[in-house]
Length: 177
Image (cartoon, rainbow, N blue to C red; front, side, top):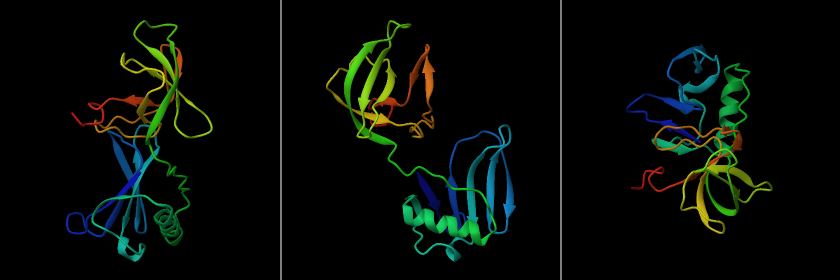
């Protein structure tokens, strides 16, 4: 997850996008604007105005959200009497995985159910349509919560009745070709 800061282009505002949305509204609480999806009423981001008052080191452009920056964000929330909880998963969203098993999909000829070890205690079950993925390969995995270069957010889903918790990515899907 990333935050964005560009004092010359936007002003002294730190942008914290959490999710994508087509239709948004906002509510302002002192120096913090909460960005809300109009349809679902879900919080999709925050804009922190006068950001240099709250953060020790702000660099221009896209910055990876770290534990230290998250602590400063939570403190900014407290100082602005904002009670929203920032439960943000800082784990990497694009990881290298090892395909430990592949089974045919019970309801689709061109899909397969892959079990992928991504270094956590549980293996991810990912439904995949790529014919060139084989057992024993290392692959790039977009975990749940990843935002693809196309803007697609990876979510847990069911493909033809089978749970899928991520995406095995091709070079094209990652924007390399």
